[in-house]
Amino acid sequence: MKILVGYDGSEGSKKALEKAKKLISTCDISKITMIHVEQHSAIEYAPFGGVVKIQDMEKVGAEVFGDDFKEMQEAAQGFKNSEVEIKIIEGNDPAQVLADYAKDGNFDLIVVGARGITGLNKWKPGSVSKAIVDNCFTSVMVVK
Image (cartoon, rainbow, N blue to C red; front, side, top):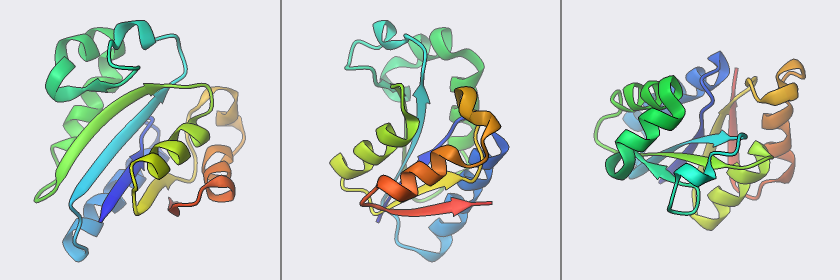
């Protein structure tokens, strides 16, 4: 089973990450990918199509994304017995980026928090998670 976790540093995304960690103990999970959708013009810092991988680009990630990148690294250390990958991807619509990434990567489940901190939508509870549920062909777990 492959799980995609939407992560933006909000309390909701932290709860989603904790739920994904709990799923490891009850499900046969082979891969977990944490994705942060960067809405700024960060693509110039990521020579591989806007994707920054910890293993390959730790220095660039730390310089460009600073505390967000470090927080994702620390959160990923809590996973055991599963492959964990962290990606930061540029995009204007986090819901669409997550839905497309899940479809293209044949993920079995997207786990997201009920509330995030994305742009102006941070004032509208659950707008990104709702858009993912409404428009995604992959199963979605919204964690409160």
